[in-house]
Length: 338
Image (cartoon, rainbow, N blue to C red; front, side, top):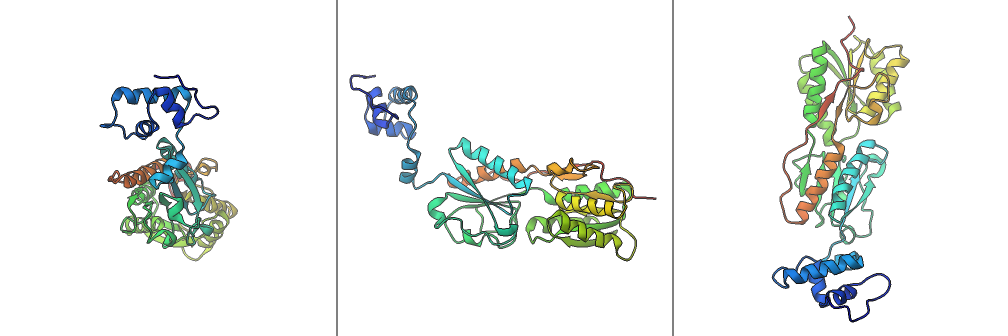
């Protein structure tokens, strides 16, 4: 290495690295941009890397990304910021993104169900791609018809507008719930269904209807909040006809409202009525009795979603296959009352 010329002061630059390594700035750019093979020797590349390490040099990512036409930024669109599930999806996506020098911007669809507006003046100028998790039908119109790759999580796999899909085995989760309750002896069910129009809830409803086609099932819809679920459950439990022995809820928030309704009506869970949830949020083990629910690998689907976007950007095929889910039997389910 040549050190005859003084190095620059302050933050090290590529010129400083070139001086210390005794090469041109063009050579530094080739080596640190990983485009040196066949152009410079292995020995020269090692010298440049050692010089950069010694100086603590970091490339100007903004300038490099401008040259490459990339911002190294992905947008994660979710129905709401208040749901723990989507926070875990973000954690998984951000972890994979960080390993590849990407950032992830988290953006909620208005009111959880309305169309997600483009949060930037020009999405194509600000983003490299979009990941959308569990979105309501037609909520992604702002991102369709652009050249931005769209990866959809927990969404309709027949949607041809997406570059890739990563899905959970939601139907199997509902089959696990119903098999558990049928084995306990339940034959009168209420399905406390989400009022949000999305593929993931449609799949739950279809799987439940198929699994319980030979027994009594009544479906009621409720908004995705505890108070709405409580009110809907109270109406279902005080209506005409035999009282159901099991409440199958589309998610844990609805299940928490159902448990609250049962207590207000003087019913015991699970002695008088069993309640099941879906998602395995933190509240599933915070309530008493703890919720029987389906655990969804939220961080893993975020990881797979970001990996799929990176694969699409690199012109590769994303990893195929869905993600399994797991029934978590707990204290809120038991045999029906005699």
